Length: 401
Image 1: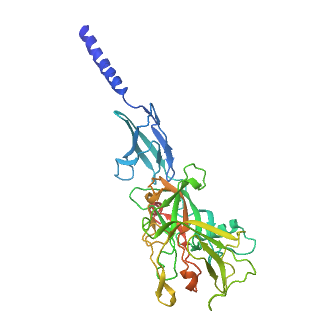
Image 2 (image 1 turned 90 degrees about the vertical axis):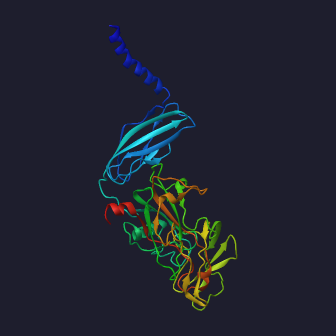
Image 3 (image 1 turned 120 degrees about the horizontal axis):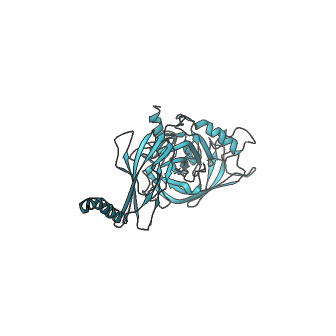
């Protein structure tokens, strides 16, 4: 009887030892299974018992239904923002460490295919604010048009396509904000989206590069909020060509104002420009154009500030001002030589790298201010940025477009 009792007590003793060991472990509460849809962000928030300030976290993918890439670290944040492009069952492991204590749990995420195909391209526009320039009123069709009317025309030229019409953002500071019908996933080690613009325009009509800002709709309100924007760090960041805190104010010409005549092939000087540094100058109104300032905006001054990029523009031949030579940035901007963008190039206001699960919104801003074109060119009055849309490279591949 004593022998039998000993055998019965041994398993119980082992359980007690395990229970004592588990007292040092960190207890995690997460659901075992989650469901989401492809290209939609799923936020997983664990509950951790006795959570302290010294804790470290690690989310690892342990099973990938699409390829053999496993044991890859997805995040070192407490909460995981999970997104997948392809349907399937993904297995993830969450590990917590605090001193000598550890805890872990494995979960699965079932990703279903989207009911209808997403559009890989731009589907919405939230703002269109071209700065003064020759084409500033290209989308303004008749008197009485509001900004909403102009934005509808502008969106119609670039949405749902990779061959959009080139929107002109005007001089320094002109911008456009667009969005997509899904979240463009940030795939580690890959370029995520493409900027369509005037990438092959070197030594032709000068086209300004545009700074890029991306936003992830973290609060889910469907709007690009001011605190959600991150700047893409391109090839010219960190060089002497990129300068912070440039500012300029453009003044709309008042009817009847006497201004000096321009050169023989021009009409009259039109928009008075006051940069924060340097001498003021005029934008010249070329013959055949009505106004260089957006006519649908009831304001006489247009002020912009931000980073400016020196592209070292000059005439190809001295005294000839129809062909130009300038430095086109390599990557990371609108109208760069390489149009493909990695979301991992995003940085915060202090220039620190940030990790975003994906992006929902995109902003393009002209970052070049040069009066060379204003003085000499017969084609345009400033070096304007062009934008023709953007495309999700992962969906383009998924849909074989």
